[in-house]
Length: 178
Ligand code: GDP
Ligand code: MG
Image 1 (cartoon, protein in one colour):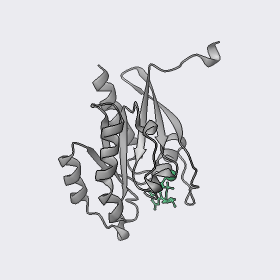
Image 2 (tube, protein in one colour):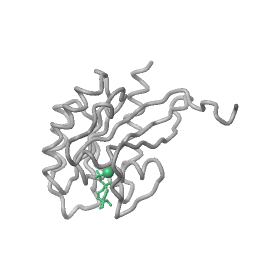
Image 3 (tube, helix red, strand yellow):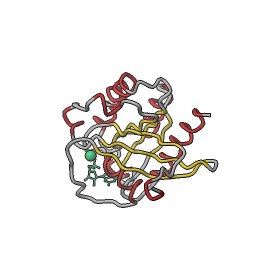
Image 4 (cartoon, protein in one colour):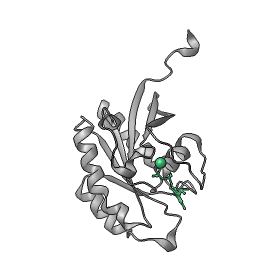
């Protein structure tokens, strides 16, 4: 059945991680549907959406997973991380507590993804809220360097760097496959 035939060369699972409220679901919505909703509804469980891109003539399906609420209790099931090729760690630049939680989320990903080569990207989200900034860019950049992470500041609200963040992760995963 041609309608149901697989239309991609590679499927890459990418997980979002980080404290509740940092904007994970909003980043997912921006990347996969190019939408934003200020009253982003909290859904419970695991959900994922997909986004297709092309790299060097290969069709890539990015399957982006969202913790969808249970991260509030740090009760994300290990299955969530399993088999991830990439992980995007998100904090909120206006909330330093969410930055301090990164070590926890990093260890979760490293210990549960079952992939020593998992590609990691650090995102400081809500960079549109410049006046409320609580995490200096330099502090985050240092953390990223110390832990071998790529780093960008993003805004799911105005779209800054959201596509670029996924592009960098997907290209790195793709290069690792070759
Ligand atoms: P999650 O709990 O990590 O999934 O975070 P949500 O995506 O639910 O976002 C939490 C709140 O922050 C919601 O009210 C969003 O509208 C808001 N939000 C998310 N991303 C941004 C952003 O880039 N800029 C601003 N100003 N607000 C954002
Ligand atoms: Mg959410």
